[in-house]
Structures are given as C-alpha cells and as structure tokens.
Image (cartoon, rainbow, N blue to C red; front, side, top):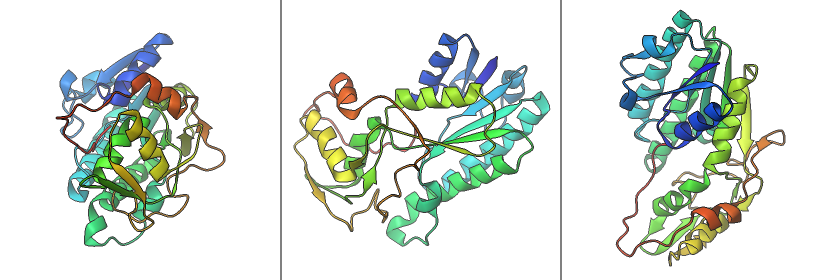
Amino acid sequence: MKIVVIGGTGLIGSKLVNKLREHGHEAVPASPNTGVNTLTGEGLAEVLQGASVVVDVSNSPSFDEAIAMNFFTTATRNLLQYEKAAGVKHHVALSVVGTDRLAETKPSDAEKTIRGYFRAKLAQEKLIAESSIPFSIVHATQFFEFVKSIADAASDGTTVRLAPVLIQPMAADDVAAAVGRVAVGAPANGIVEVGGPQQFRLDEFVLEGLRARNDPRTVIADPAAGYFGVEVDERALVPGKDARLGETRFKTWLSQSAKPLAPSAENTVATSR
C-alpha cells in the first residue's frame, strides 16, 4: 500500500520509511525537504494522492506552548482535511507515554514550557480522535537516543539532578518498527502504548548512558528535580501493562551506538524527533 510518512526525513521517520519499503510498501517521506509543508498545506494534495495510510511522526521545533500548539493543531487540521479529500483510510500519529499525566497540572513559571508542549500534544490527539478518519495514536516512551539530552537539561555545571522515578526507554529503531506495525494494521481508534523491554530509575538510566560515553558529570537522585524540570510521579514515564515492548536492551544499544564525547562537544537539548 502507499503510506505517506509526515516527518519522513527525521530520526523516526527515516527509519520508518526504510522499514516499510523493506516490507514491500510504497513509503513516501514527506517534509519541507521534499516539498511538503503541513503548516501551509503546500504539497499535501499531491503527496496524498492514492495514499491508504498517513503516519505523522513530525514534531514541533520548540517546547514553547504557543509554538507547539500552533504547530500541532495547524498541521493536524491541514492533514486531516487533505486526507479526507484523498480518501485516506488510516491516520497514525506518534505521541508520548504520559502525555495526559504530564499536561494535567497547572504549571509554575519554571514548568511552563514542557507542560505546554504536552498540552499541545493533547490538542493534536483530540483533533485526530474527533475526525471521521479511522486512527491510531502511538504513545512511545523516551528514546535511548535522547539520554544525553535529558542529562543536559538537568545539568548545573558538572552535576546532573534527576528524580529517581521509573522510566522504560526504547531504541528509535524499535519505535519505528512499532509504528510501522500499527500503520499496516487495522486502525485502533484509540491509543497503542509502546515501550522498551526494561525499566530503570531515571537517574540510573542517565548515569549509565553518560558513563558509556566517558562523560564525567555526577548524577544525583533528587526527588525535587523532576523531568525536564517538571515534577513527575513514580509511574508518569512508563506505559501500562498492555504495552507492546521493543526488543533492544539499553546495554546492547550502548555497545553499538555510544561514543565518548569529544572534549569540545557542546551540550544541546533535543526538542524534536
């Protein structure tokens, strides 16, 4: 079948396109780089012609609530409008385990950014659920690939403070595989949760990731530190008991992917997939 992958040139999207093609599908990457802009609608009519499934793995360029809300709601409205006109039978969107829990409380100024991002994701999910197009929303846990970004966001000099709550991260390859299986299956008309095969304490997960890269920062378990500065409870970052689990274990991924940090490497915070 023809499957259009919105955000198909990014981390998850590029892996998903390759996996779908390996299984014989016509997977078409769609992004501004390929002439498709979901914010303006440019290229959507053309790329969706003949498509059976649309998978949206695109992401906001910022955690800022106003930017994220505009991105997710505008892009999703445009997608659903053009999908309906094209006769698309299944809309799949990638979201985050714990979105509802992370968005539900009133933020302080310090928490405004990340909570606002999750409120924007909830708005996206609501638009999808209220559409007439059959849908599946995939809630994935954090990716192994962002372990350094979590550390960077929680760093004060050479000290990293993180809440010792549970997390069940997964490899981006497994995320792409899970999204692909959902895309070629029947619409769930609801949420499908996916996660990694192991649970960690957040501080222990980050410490293991940093040590594999010879990063000398000290990681401290601090219940008040939260996750990207947001207070989280014990199970806010882990999926439920019926989640579909990936196969790649963290140590295996580290042995294949982790490289020591260069002395001049700058810390950056990933804000998109």
